[in-house]
Image: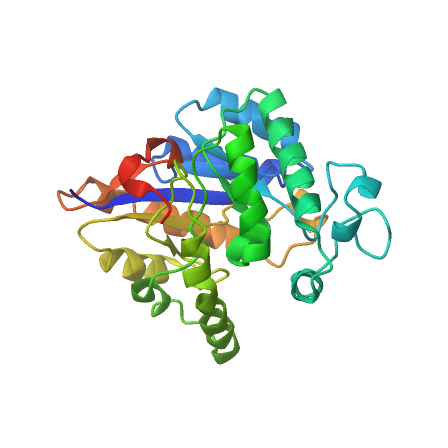
Length: 290
């Protein structure tokens, strides 16, 4: 069987400009999937975009750091930062608390269910889940999320680990490469957290290229895609506008660079050896997490 590729945009719902970019890319056949942030400032607009584009697979982009929870803060105290209202403001703070064992899995479950149910109440048929900043790399986050999938009848989750063939083209700095090497030591533990009927891919491309997903990088990554297997390409397209200026994010001007990179691959997707473009709702029995 030929390789299959999910092209997924994170941060759906972040701003109207991000939503517009996702709609335009999907309509141009350069994007198959997006993950919606339940607490994004443009959530309602994203729901409208999703309804207007029924062939776009929509997942839930679960947020546990750098944002506002859906749950009342006093019901998830171990996820809340020093202000008593919002999540910890940085990934480093979250990971340190996770490694100290001060974050309760029950709080992660409670907030994940609240975010998922917000999407479902809006009429979104959720194809899968992933996490902001890939926090489910860590077993203490992946375990409760897999329990949540069983309770909510969602059948797929992002494989947060990047294959070696993709990493080599990220042009990442030494610090970034060392961080990824350390995190990849967690992959065997993630793979052991298997659950019946939970699907995933063979890996996620573009994680190490975040902030550097240019036309050249994207072309290099796709040129080495294996002839078989199912992979996800993660991206963060959007318009760098006044709405984005008001959002705390390190990805600004590069969101438009990623848009152009994605549009540049459209001709290659019509070639005879091109991967089949799908979304997470197309995964089947051969894609069981194991």
